[in-house]
Length: 205
Image (cartoon, rainbow, N blue to C red; front, side, top):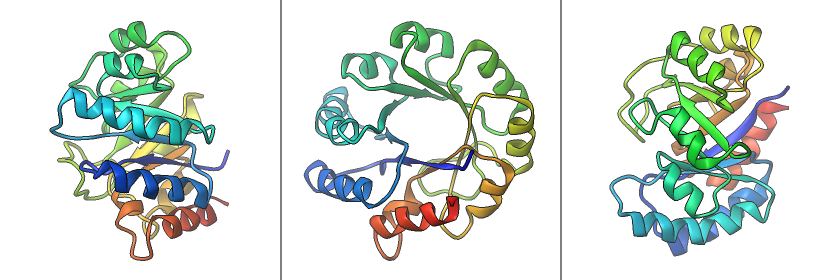
């Protein structure tokens, strides 16, 4: 299948402004998933952000996923949760979220971690960081071959993450990424996020 776009919110947002930006961005072209990833904020701020942004995303039949917090994802009616290796373990996250929710797992550059996540039932495995990123401190550097290896061996979708932009995405698409998780490459795009989404769609087709 062709790759699809998985949007990650900026780590800091002005909710009123960002709600309008997100609406326009999602209407620009096809997006498959939006992950709310806020850093250094309170639970109440995460809940408020979910209340504001989740309807914008879900009303467009796009999955709304929360980073790190299955407890809040379940409570706030999110479609799923994304957990890292230092966050809630997959099995616990699945227990909290239920069988029908999306649970994705960060696997860095590790075939071993990805196989464990896949065997346990993860809905996707995420590899990265493929490129330098300003959004978070990347613990590992992944190479495109791991996407090729995974997609040739397993049915579970793989997500490429880390510093992905319109200009460097092509090798990851060619290697077999099912989804490209993009944050700065959308929100900081020189011609604006709507233009970035359209550019990614052209790359996918």
